[in-house]
Image 1: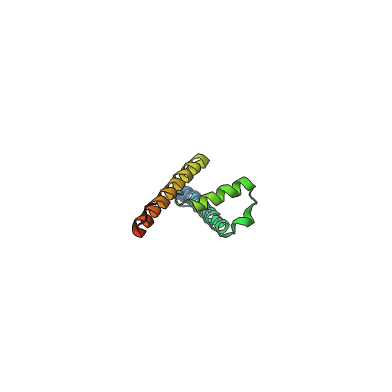
Image 2 (image 1 turned 60 degrees about the vertical axis):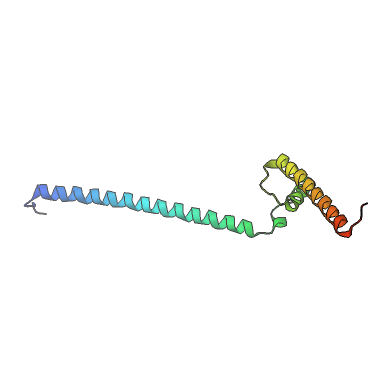
Length: 117
């Protein structure tokens, strides 16, 4: 081993090398962390998509009350109801609307036929 003609320069270079290695290591850790997060986010998204593709009966069994509520939701055209109370309110409004339509059609039939019953 010989003495370096530029001792201060070699110390500075070693210090810079260790600093650049540390920065590179930190950068790799950040990139790795972002990659892992992206992977889990993508995996979570694909898992949720798979859950949507599974038929409804396979995921879990519903009790009779939940089945009836689900059937009622399918029958009512306005599906923006909030909670069970909103569903019942929408159902009542829909029934009244249907009754009114029936009355209007009955009146139209009477007018077109010409009977005054």
